[in-house]
Length: 129
Image 1 (cartoon, rainbow, N blue to C red):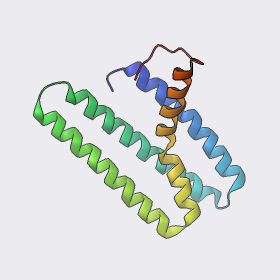
Image 2 (image 1 turned 90 degrees about the vertical axis):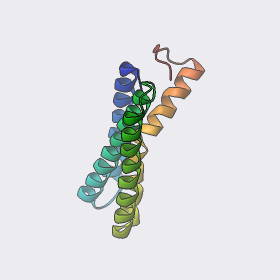
Image 3 (image 1 turned 45 degrees about the vertical axis):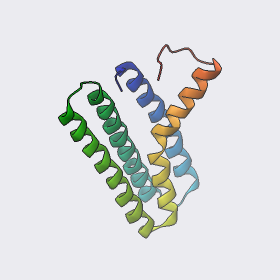
C-alpha cells in the first residue's frame, strides 16, 4: 500500500485482534505452549503476506517491470510458505491447524473490521483503501 499511516493503523488493529485471539486460545485450548507458538507463526506469515502485497502495490505504480516481477515472486513465495505451514501443522494436530489459520487471518480480519467501521460511519480515521 502507498499510505504508510493506513499500514500502521491496520498493523495496530491486527495486533489487537491477534492479542484477543491468543487470549482465547490460552484460556480455552489444551497444549498452550504449542498453540501459542503456532499462533505466532500464523501471525508472522500473515505479516509476511501483508508486506509482500504492499510491496507489490508500491512497485506497480513505478512503471518499471523488474520491481513488479520481484515483488510478485515474493508474494507467491509468501503463499507457498503459508501452504507448507498449513500442511505441516495439519500433520501435527487439527486443533493447531485452526490456531494457525486464526493467526493467518488476523490481518484480513482487521482489514474487514476497518472497512465495515469506515463504511458505516462509526469511525472516521481519514484513511481510505
